[in-house]
Image 1: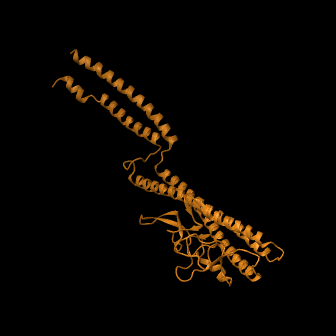
Image 2 (image 1 turned 180 degrees about the vertical axis):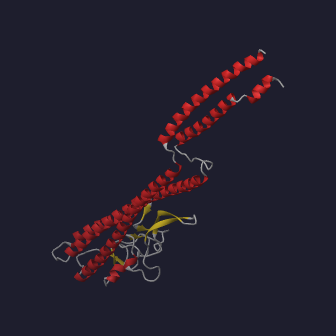
Image 3 (image 1 turned 30 degrees about the horizontal axis):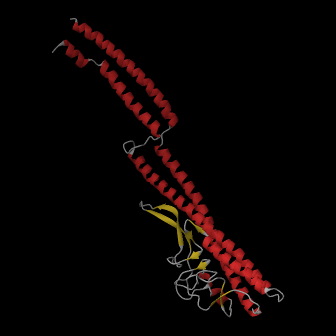
Length: 337
């Protein structure tokens, strides 16, 4: 074995400088990765526990974001329906006013009836126009079950066992699902189903006339597709009696009371959606902040660390250069022997 080969095997300076430089480079690479990603825990290798929590939490945050989108659509749908009901209340109030004015014998009831006819047409326009994104909660049509509530996603619930469920917000359906349809079952403005007789719509139901003890099955407007046999649309002519007027006024008064009930229900649901939307945003912010404390990098600290490691890297390169120069000088001495 030559003296030269022995020197190479036992020379520590270059190896030490290389080892220090490699260690510094590894730390610098990690610090720069955290700087670019903003995360100190980016993979399971960084911290398996924190990484798992981060993945699950970000999944929940994504689901909450979807719930927020659904709440936004629901808010618009309910607001549209609520606006339709409010407009219907105004129109029905005008109709009742005109019916009351018909008690005066000097009033031209024919002209009053023309005005009522226009108002009834407006009621149907209001109901059919209260649509958002193709969804109408005021007109009941074929394919919709009136006994089932309208539901929208309202919250994300993660159980202690890891299971996830979606909490729903509901606009309730009818109060009873069997037997005679009553006035409280009228949760829509209009019931146009071909399989019914308009009973689930306030304006198309005879239940209000029944509740008022009217001599006829009065409705404000007729169902487009349902069985309207025996129903009488509220209207006036020169022969309308005071008894008939009283029945009409009492029927319309019952309708107004139910419309106010529906409007109140929509208002409560709007308020609930607003509260849930605010909570969902707060929850999302809280989860984001919480997981950030576990996995986010301290950018100010990392910036200082990167600068320090870059300085160490320069010093390491200089040390390696010095070690190499010393090694070459000694190597030349041995070569000259």
